[in-house]
Image (cartoon, rainbow over all chains, first blue to last red):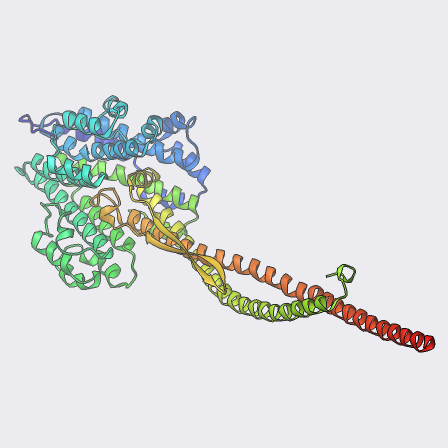
Length: 351
Length: 211
């Protein structure tokens, strides 16, 4: 999916560029203000807060809440692409490896849409070219006839090879689950490989990704547990490389009778305090648990954002915050549009 | 049966009497059926009320969950996950009899699809989307069961109405008309008998006079 460059990166230039962009991100007070607004007011506010170009471009095609969602995604895609374009050497490898998640996201949108029979224009609207694959590469994927050709083209342009057993499992099942899970695992595997922990900032970056793997693994285990799936079947979806949740602990969690029974095994984790309340509550919803893990993850990113100014850390920090900004705008706008209680919307925000 | 159409004969009287007996027993059975159906209807009505409550609450929950999923994960992600879904719900349609009336019996064969069989990747699918999917499965299950109860209730209402009309027709039209016909035939037969007696007496008198 990505190779490793021997050149050092242009950290100073990219960090300076990212710092300028970070200054224009919305602050916590802006979200508080938006919570008090109506949907048209939010549209106007967003239009005046750095999303003007995208709002104007898409206004002819979409409207209301969809306009906000598409415009914020497009803005994020453009910002990420411009950062990626300005990076060089090993920095480019790391940023590119990190942004590959958007390539996989887009591939999933295309494959799912194609197998369902969605028209190309509608699928195009839903793509977020925030990864290495630009609009023209995505157009090429969109123009392909069937899922086989799309997978083959993706393998070619991203230098990945989906093992025959995964392809066969996909063919046998008739759905994309095996391929999607394989690509998600491969993403983290290659992302960890792309980060050479030769310096403190790179080690921090790697640690951050490993913690992200922990949260994903835990969320997967708990979702499947709620479904009544336990043991070996759960371990099929385990991503290697987590910091605190290794295979042994994951197996223990996967074998636990219930979520509450797994709580004891979770007590040793760093983010236990963030999810403790949600685990104690005998509600059958994972919403609070996931929100707790997300908040923990962001806190980790914030923790090292000011350290090592000339490293990959400020760039990663900006990308995470930009993504959160887009998510928060959408949460507020969609929440208000759907009539969700404002306190609940506040709880869903990642601040 | 209009009295004009009856030939006042003894066999017609027997026929009418037979019809009256049959109508009365039919009336009794129909009345019992109507009462039975009404009792059954009230039981189904209670069930329907509960089901409507469940449908409303499940609908609210599902809408709330999908709204949260669309907010947190984005409408694109939710839509995309929906496109990936390959397994569809399956219901089995049958029928059962309530007091001789056939009502549909709907059984959910496959409503819930395990997450691993839904079609989208397990790792990247958030708990919000999964919870929304589960809520909609629950809503669908409730809707299928509610459909059975609602159709049964409507069919029962139609059947009660039909039976009520039949009971009324028997009570206020068929039986009174038959009784009227019976009375008419009996009256005519008695009159004919009297006429015969008089005629015989007359003939007897004539015969005696001739002797």
